[in-house]
Length: 605
Image (cartoon, rainbow, N blue to C red):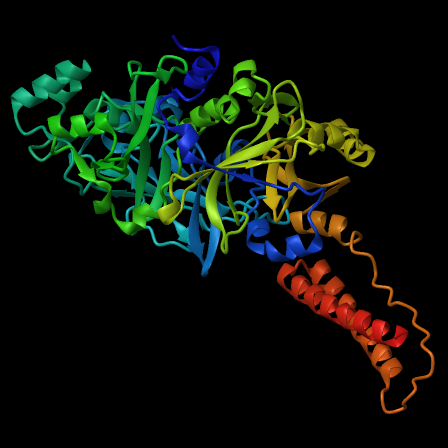
């Protein structure tokens, strides 16, 4: 017979969703000091330079208004990734300029236009997450048609994407519209090998029947070289090839080797895994496959990233030519792999309960956690996981992470955060940082309330609202810096009639201080520029030295002057936003003050 205590332990250590979550998460304490110090700011320059100011929703609207170029192009989704730009590890946001044939003018909605001529999208828009122009617009590193910018894209055509839901026929007598050039259009032909040849009457008859389109059979525009491209929506394409895999809801775009690729995370799932606690309709999930789709020719490669997964091994045995080992993935693609959000959300949901290790606490559910709430565009919603480049505690360099904070259930203070690492050999490692329970650490909703209660901020937002603008407060981000937290929230303005969203202000919260400024650097300077008080050298009136050859008083005077110089220089760096220089001057100032203390002690002796 199982005792109560034994049953509790059994329940506690059943494999939650068979993700082996308890064993996989590395747990560490996080001090969560009241506010970052100036030294924290100086030592985390790369993290601060990669704080995501652009929210993906207003940014998508902005891309569509400034980069669509023509009415039939559309930016469907904005993805987050990282690239090396000018030698710096930088987080960016990018989106594919896809073709939306539904937006063609009514008189242009012909079969030739829809199926033969307007066949593909063209290029991307890409901008850093933290850079804003004087007009409140993103700084585009890749833009326009043909693509102009810091990256070379040799194949910008997008035949396969997230909006390509209809079939097209290529290599016909009708030239394909490639891209607009001023008042003219540039035309071309598809040069890939994908698609099914329509080189016989029987094949044309079969596809005319399959698509319910007689034009395929009777059109004089088709030739023996013509090919039909279908299953062009990347989700539909992968599902058709591997219907036994579950797909992540957010495929993302990658630009590498002069081409555009889509990466689609895929899962093996089950509802029959023994002794596994279910969540919803499943009790087993593994992110065992990364699917890569070429946006030009539609070629699909299934890379097995978890060869220990029993289900994927079975599928490999059944379909040996479908899957390839992850080791065969080019390094240029591997460096862009992200930990998938859907998987992370499931694990975060499980961890809210299974972080409790004490059997009695677990049984009584005394320490349940929850996902905090935030305000977006005036509405309360659950906080979403977000990608971030930051330096983890005790690590030497910054890395790309997916993270989410937690609060105790039915409370609003922050109690910890969960992170999934995405880079190199650390890919897939989960880290949980637990905050001290004996004191309050402000949570996201408490920070949101403090922002709403700040009279300077609310008066400015209300003024904009009365002026005919829609004020959009973007995602609130919790940024760990050193052993403390920084909160950042962007503020966008958009005309009530649906105008161009512009990033106009950045709200920064550190400890008890709040600032809203035009830029992040100004917001940080507004908080930390006055938090570091002017150095007041100690007034020392030493007695006359017993031996004139030891000019201690003169040394003290010189050190006081040197300390003042370092302080003044640090303030100059602070105003300029040069955090590295600011940190160097603070370190030098600290050394001078230590020497002053030593000399003062000698004087007292």
